[in-house]
Length: 185
Image (cartoon, rainbow, N blue to C red; front, side, top):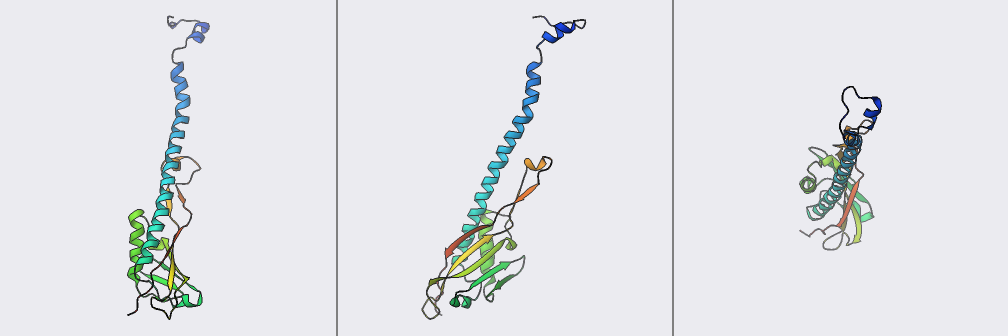
């Protein structure tokens, strides 16, 4: 089929199919790109979710094996001790801080998996496990729980869309381990 010339009739122009594939491609390309970026963003978010869960597990394991951060006398009555930290200090409700370096080790363990974790994102809780008591060698064996709070995932591709946030806050992640008993001096 020859192409219609510049003086072609409207009927000849209507039958001309040159460029139809280009128009179809131009219509479908934005949809394909949005779908591809959405799948990529979802996959990366799921990976970050898994990474945060693993960071909580690694941090709770570190919390179970490092020196106890706080005095755990409150556990004898079935209480709990909750330790939180900031950029330079550690505070524990229900007990006094005895080894702040232990909290730094917990933060460092979590940062090996998720480098963006800060002390302010970690809440470490000691709870009575029912194993041991204050009068026996080894003392009270605590359950150590680490919760990661306030972690955020930046939306790279979807954040550029109108009406979408540029980051999402992940839910809290928690992991529990049985801690070691304290050795007699």
